[in-house]
Image (cartoon, rainbow, N blue to C red; front, side, top):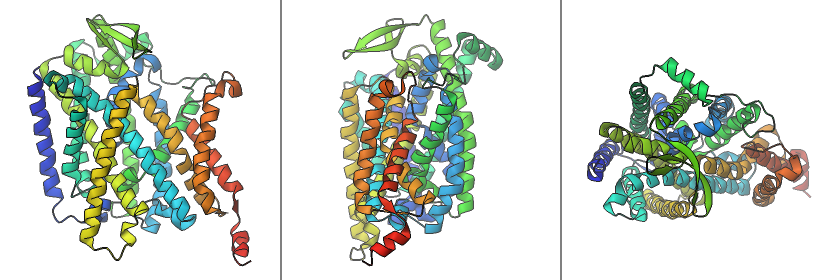
Length: 509
């Protein structure tokens, strides 16, 4: 299909987003941008958060990983359910009780200013790296599919996409994103369902027959029972629970939308609804992944090793194409399916791209302004000045995203979902330790030492990770490294803390 035709559909989709943004950003102010005036509809938030939680990485990498790992990713999704329940009944009541705009205000109330700034700082680092990794994957596909043929450089493509996101989030922020994410989730899920239906029809398979074929190929293995494996179901479920608690419950981007809902009860309904829907959606993504491999094999695909930038990579040979796991879905959609399917794929992919990027830039702007600049506490600043500073920060983060995406392009990783989960284990661990210490204990930490503790914990985790064979033998550490990171942070905080009575007595000496 002509790249110009595909580009016209992308442009039409963006104009639709702009129309929604225009209608929802009227009479917006800083409160609208940061927290949607605490008046968001919980059903819209729940549905829109599906798109934010999944992103383009899920759309491409989860199906791509089925051949190597079967349906192992569903084990993590079961852990997500436990994590969402914890968020609904432990973290959300805490945030609503304190009426926070930034969830890291809790750390200031409970542990101190240094803890507060450290928590916000780790969120900014975590979300910047994670969001730009997701963004890179989708931009790279769009570059290959459309812009390379038009001789547009990769950095220009990234700049244009970030410019689009800036335009429709610039005024409304969360108030706008709640609506645009809902629209984009509809498009993404519709694309997912249509992809599954098309391949089933193309291969003349019923749903039941497809399941049998996947079982025969070993693509649908769900539970892994080897305790030493990274895919051991207990490890995966625990990791999934803690990934959700940290990457959703302790993440300003995700919670910013939740606490924009008017009441705690509605916010809890939102998070529990999201939990149930996610189980079905991830299972459908995995089913699609299995179908894609069956379809690729029916078109003569074969697996072999190639070398790219000096690194050995597993790739599928389909005709004259060599494609890695993250590129299998795009290659099949663009080369072996009808033109109408190509359009559906591109729109669904873009719909997966925008929710993870627009929410991230908005949340990072909010956290930087509220937590680091203290914009809400500056009574000497006018609302107009606060708005101007907020807009400048918003633009600055878009520039940071541009640089980070170009770095990921240079690194050129094979599977971005592995990269994102690895980033999370190192950067969300200190947040897990801080919040857990604050909630489970009544001890008072030495606040000035908290930044050092939260830097030391990931460094110790890195030593454990790189020497795990010497330490644990055959046992492989996977995503549970996040739990280890949080535990190290918790223990260090406990060591450098005292009971409130002791802290009160020392303050009077």
